[in-house]
Image 1: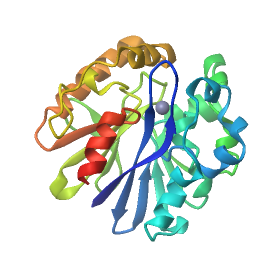
Image 2: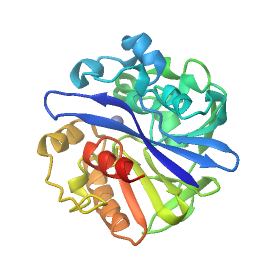
Image 3: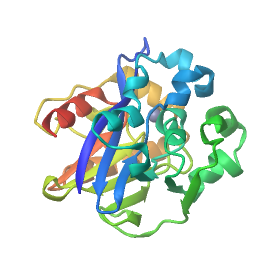
Image 4: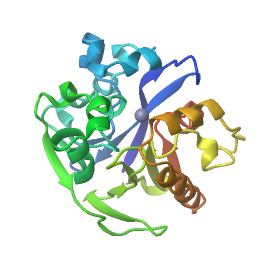
Length: 263
Ligand SMILES: [Zn+2]
């Protein structure tokens, strides 16, 4: 399937420098599928919807960066989006859900429980229920799924699109692998890794990656399980080193610029 790389939100946190919200727009035989949404029109209309973290992160983008306006500019319609597959339910990944109210939203059962039905004290401070107040049609994927690759398991939620449980950043976090045909397998790692230098020595086009230490400190501060995060970095390094596989983290602008420029 054809895969477009969009950045649907930009933040300029003073501590870490500019970060993006990397979103995949997949053209499938059955309609459009988004992997994550970034920020949506509702977040720009009422920034309080994003919660207090917005003060730390400093939103630098405008509504034109929303997935819905970007895909309209490409000639699509909001109703063309039939599925959204999310890595997790943090506000910077799902703000656009309400711009596609008819879409089926795929997530792990663990992440849905953490955010929606059974949040603990930390989760209650973390997630933003206003972002799903429109009542999306959730499709939950429970358990580990089937054997996939690199010692991982996954749920093939749609043909060629696999939700790969990778908890650590949040309780039910997952990566999303998309079969991009001749362009290989694109693995959207979400927030399983922040700094691309944690899993790769170069960008896909071969530009050297230097560690972004402040971004790593931020990753540690907001993650739920540090041991799991370290294991995920190791797993993503293995995956990214596999022929035909490209790992893309949600927020590293160096990877976004590299792959969006070559798409
Ligand atoms: Zn994030």
